[in-house]
Amino acid sequence: MTVRHIARILATLLAFTTLFFVGCSQPPKPVVQENIPSPVEEQPEGERFIQLSDSEARTVSQSLAISKQGMRSWMNFAPALDRSIAYVAKKPQQKLALDQYGLQVSWKTMAVSLQRMRALLPKLDAHPELLAENFTFFRLDSDPQFTGYYEPALKASLEKKAGYAYPLYSKPADLFMLNLEDIHPRWKGQRAYYRIENGRAVPYYDRKAIDMKGVLHAQQLEIAWAKDPLDIFFLQIQGSGRLILPDGSTKHILYAGKNGRQYVSLGRVMCRKGLLPKDGISMQAIRKYFTENPEDTYKLLATNPSYVFFRLSDSGPYGSMGQPLTPRVSLATDPSYLPLGSMLLFDVPMPEKSAAGTFQYGENLAGFGLAQDTGGAIKEHHLDFFSGYGEEATWIAGHMNTNGAVWLLLPK
Image (tube, helix red, strand yellow):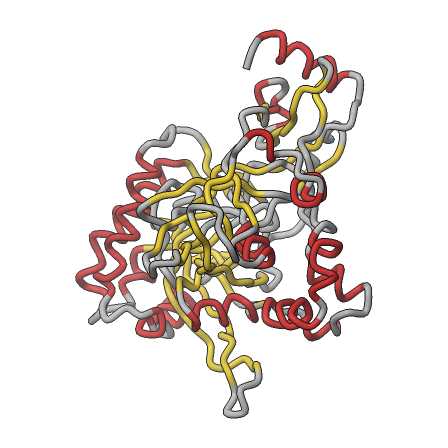
């Protein structure tokens, strides 16, 4: 980005033009603030991290059932834990990773916590109570919300051919991003996404312009073509996935960037329009509606102006740490409240199919989690549970929207 561009953007900001500003995050679910962002507000009074007694912590430790996470032993968490250790080790150790509601935690403390857990793994199968002996448990107040995300699969071709008409785009060269914290510390964690038009910084193209007006066609950014535009829409929400190619082989497709526009929930839009019942919003219900009403596809998808760009890869998926995600262990969090690298215990009802094939919540999953991803719609005490790849993972993510319990582990 040139000095001239920076000067133009600063002038645009000072003139209060219509740039869109977003929190420091990665899709799948971007959120945007319009116009100049306000200074950081004072935190409301009230205790949001509640310290457990030793006896309460022991009770939580002994309730864990890691087999429901697909783990035969605590040692199976080692690869995921090592990824968090590597990430936290690169952070400025003396700076604060967390500063919320009177709880201050440095990156050094985070590193100590992770390393201590790594050393305890061989002992935890026989002695889960060691968690309570080595860590202080802080419960997140207000019954955190849990949603789910997954690695979707979609039929696609790397070349445009009959039956594959809907493009997936790489990141455009005319899409720029400015870290607003570089301008003023009160805009910490906020970014502006824009393009230059007639010497002015303007918001980048929205979904309607990209998909319905074809404004990107001339840039030749197509990296693949899909069979179904709804598959692309859901891929953008999840952030990454797998392409099932015509010869049966697969290719990972990963997040490369976003247009910075506001994320709008399609399910909520359809509910407001009376197209879906309030208690019946799910990915499966949305798919069913579009199968029965294909003429509404682009009109409704355009109500979400947010757009995601991709890159192809031989591996994935990756979270915001730049590390592979682990099914039923990796969680997307708001890093202002639960920084990347945080060690968590959680207890949440899991979606399941009834004998009749309908949705219901079944037994709780009480397990060990790692904050390894972020999401624009993941704010404060809202966590996104990575369910993995495949039919079951898709079903869980499509139905998961409930409240649970979360404990942050910090070293004693």
